[in-house]
Length: 114
Length: 110
Image (cartoon, rainbow over all chains, first blue to last red; front, side, top):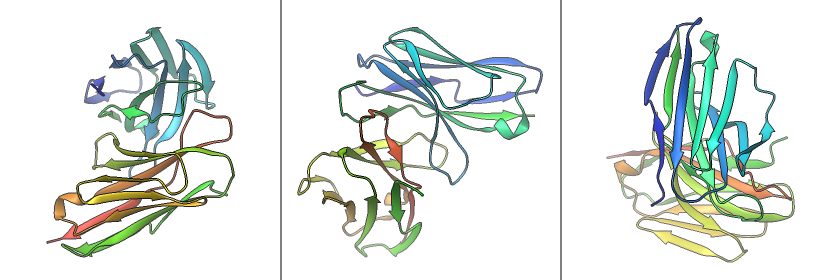
């Protein structure tokens, strides 16, 4: 099973709303990632969790707040977003540090900020 | 300067017209190279992992090869359903986090 599950698939939110994106994997992977992808661009790394600890934050604005409740789950909490934050948000996982293996991606959440 | 460069940016083929996509990297110490396929509005789908120069992997009409400085994704007799963006990602230096190229958008016309 190489599945990474993301919910919801689509989300429309206002600039004053608070919402959360969820990601789950059961492959025993110890690294989990959030990426942001705009149309016709490659995925852009936002956050990396390694062994449930935040190891990389690519200077992401504080209106995006990641959380890793356990080794299988990853959340991205959204608050006071801007229209330019509209994008496809991708979760991925891989075996983690010292393991040179591929990452598997979820199907993404299409976020629209109005 | 991009560490991972994919070419061409876009490619249009007729059904059955074989071609190759390129992924080159400018730094040494490659620890792994990955190919993904991405359909519009979907997450990248993993295709292949390559680790060593000379290594080859195949899946249906796709074949990935690796040299010391680049990788090729060969598409043999493509069909319209092969239309997608193909992304290359590499593990460089001491990082386990892949660095992505900008992708090649492939359109196969019937």
